[in-house]
Length: 89
Image (cartoon, rainbow, N blue to C red; front, side, top):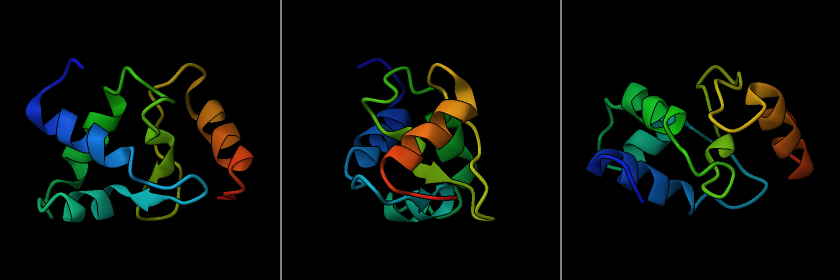
């Protein structure tokens, strides 16, 4: 995989988020023991070239909004993927 150490750490964590559930960027940052790095997590998700294989679509904003999506089709695809996993935002 190509990416910075931090990006790889984020992407590896994303693979542990179960199908049908979501986490916020902040929750991911806390899980990675970098609680003030929610924005860096969002940036790592935005640079994910392996979407949807690495499921960055399962990460949303703390206010409950979708945020962005790096995969083909952008946010529309993120919403479709979440709905296919029975997650309704």
